[in-house]
Amino acid sequence: MLTLDLTRLGNAIRSSRIAAGLSQDAAAKVAGISQSYLSFLESGKKEATTTVLVDLARAVGSEAHVWIRAAVVEVDQVDVVGRD
Image (cartoon, rainbow, N blue to C red; front, side):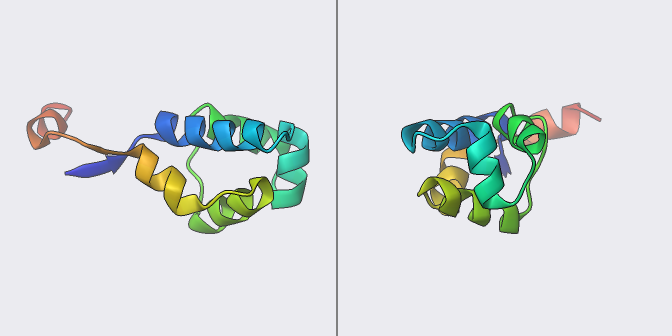
């Protein structure tokens, strides 16, 4: 089963933002979100909608699908069942 690793997603977002030379505040303003929300996304503490990911990717000159591919991981179904 595949799942989205929010820490990996956040790292990908952060790397793209830094590569673009933007602060969290600047990237957040362009994307139409708050700096604190971006901070939570980059630290893997919040999930984002597809719309937010696309807007943020555009703001930093990246593409959301690249981030998502970097963050998708395979989870053993036994591990998922064992968490209940």
